Image (cartoon, rainbow, N blue to C red):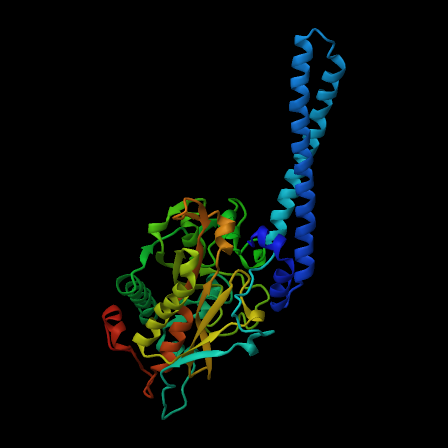
Length: 423
């Protein structure tokens, strides 16, 4: 959520930064300012009435002491009560309206964020490794998986619906090996604290990390209990400290968590096509940081490097792109996407999106720290996939496939998988 103080003081700057996203910045900002002005006017009138009532109450006391008649002035004071009640209700309604308006405004792009209308304007930041050479035409992960019996879309559709899969045998073992490999790398090598959070989250948690109210249609909701299946571990993990005031010496906090992720992906292009690339349910290891404002720029670079380390250890060629203003996620101020090469697809696949949210999520969660000045300040939050397993799974099968139909397991993963190859 944006700081209302910045909107008041620099409305033109806020409008320009929102317009860079391709949104209707003027309409959103003007609506907030109108509501804010009405709310403040109601509160000012209420304060004036309270002051008048206090002043007149003292006059009544003095007149009574002097033996004077106070019936008329007492009737005037009683009339204040109805007007004060009305103003209280008006101010509360305007405050709620203002919050709803603010919740619907995306974060401001970082001042150094590349300008652009869509993904075609995303600049490539760096590349690691090279595309593997093949002496044969590489197969897709679907062909490999079906031949080796690693997963079944047909059986999963029978059990649930399309866009689900069921890992089987060595396929299930590979998924489990990747989860443990990712968690161990992020906790033992990168210093993150492991968390095993609930998979069901409440609406307040989703508001805190900005999935609600904007992305209600993308979520699976348990109607009876008012809870939602977590779309990503970002939600429960970032909310670990919601409504808390942390000590400055606690920061930065670094958490890593494995969870299945559940997304309806309403209207998503390519959903339901064969393959693991876009699913309703997929596994992911998420890394989350909570830090002081002055730390978040450097922490984004290190968080991205922590996600990259996974692909480097596995020997997978990838590239880093920075998202332009028109391609940024709703709550992010700056984002790097990590895209791994998948030869069977002939394309790069996003396996991690590493974002700095500034104080946008912290304001929604009332997540603060006590600074050296003795005042409470909003934290900055960051997160990224460390990494998403479905697409990493795809990259492993397609990059390390052999002409005889087997798949070589990268050496760092072998202790977890228990063999050198699949098949």
